[in-house]
Image 1 (cartoon, helix red, strand yellow):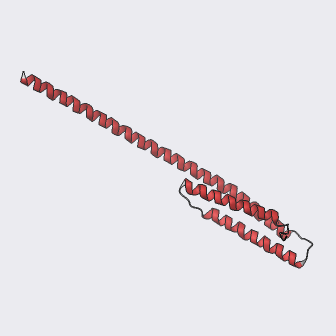
Image 2 (cartoon, helix red, strand yellow):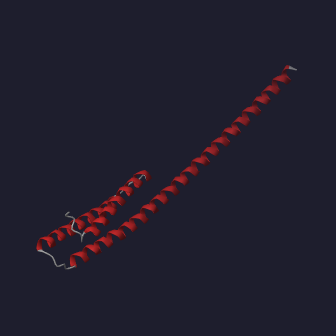
Amino acid sequence: MKKIIFRLGISLLVVFLASCMDSKSEELEKASDEVQDAKEDLKQAQLEYEAEVAEYRESVQADIDNNKAEIERLRAERINARADAIQRRNERINELKRRNEEMDARMRDYRGERREDWQEFKREFNKDMDELGKAFKDIGKDNVK
């Protein structure tokens, strides 16, 4: 009788250990699948981020190119004014050109890796581009009050 109980106990122990081993391997496989899914999600997010950056760069480049054309138009435009007013206007045009070139360089040189860095860069860049746009509108105005 003791042998039967002992064998039954050993058999139950083996069955229990085998079922634990199966559940551990299932958990490991599930965890491995989750890691793989996370890697794929990260890769997809990175691709979306890169596409967003590329699209924004194209949009900004179009704005910068438009600014260059406007600068050339302003340079070619002849105005009837005193020599000192013409000189101030030309200085302002040169300043616009310098600022436009700086914006172009900032966009080309940006190498942010994190989306948070990109969002901050884009926010600041948009603000600076808006200020540059306002400066273009103000080129014909005399700001002396």
